[in-house]
Length: 178
Image (cartoon, rainbow, N blue to C red; front, side):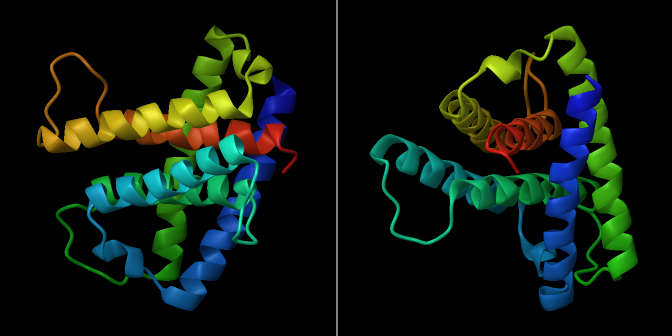
């Protein structure tokens, strides 16, 4: 488990560096996005990964690791947006945005550590293609919950699905050698 802890932190470090660089370039322009738009952004990235996995071909010179990183960052942004849903402030100070990023990474990692313990690191024996399929399933669940105006009868809410997408994406990055 200690190796997973270290590997997880290394992946997140690279994701946060990209998030911070984009904050410098674009500010928090992502604040304009509704949750459904973030879900669709993640869907686009997961669909591209699956297409590349199935066809073995890509025409854009960005590999699938960058798409998993994008899903991690969009998942964290979605969790931030859930918290800030009633806050109309579009531009957040950089230190506040980074603090919120850390808050949701820590909460998501905590969930991963609990599940990873209970599942005995089963993800290590999974194929990256299966991880992609699980992410796509989580996205379809999110879309259904969104179509139901966030109401569920017995299922986890949107936040848990975003956290699972982040954690599965981190696992894929680890398996792909990031």
